[in-house]
Image (tube, rainbow, N blue to C red):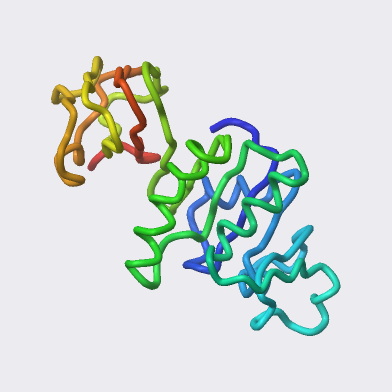
Length: 200
């Protein structure tokens, strides 16, 4: 994983795996979404409506009361206002499944509409947004899932099963890398998920 301008910690399940925790510990700048500050009180800023922020931490609160967007998007806009575009998202999954699915899909919105270079890390792996032709570092046995967003053409090299322009979300899941790199070529956007470890 690369270096990031900022880490946004959402108020889902706090990470326990070493990979996301390392991102958090080494972050240049950490923004907590509202109540997530209870897990990381040393953050640089808190973004949200403030309803779950302890009184002693409210001096760092950037209060945004509008309800059109969720706190993850508000935190992303705040980072963009500070010139930060390479953003890692942690704690954005778990708890409610509708929030998890919504937060994962927001990665595409942030890349396509806002110019963000997003990465979402969970306890098992990470999501990145890609477009066109991209090469991905991997290892033999790494589990890979591809979620087509708007590609009419999509192909792969270096995966166990050939990719195609999937019409359903489940169709690109449960693939496997064959070596140290794989390549995807599409004519639009797609999400790529890779696990930290090989399937056992």
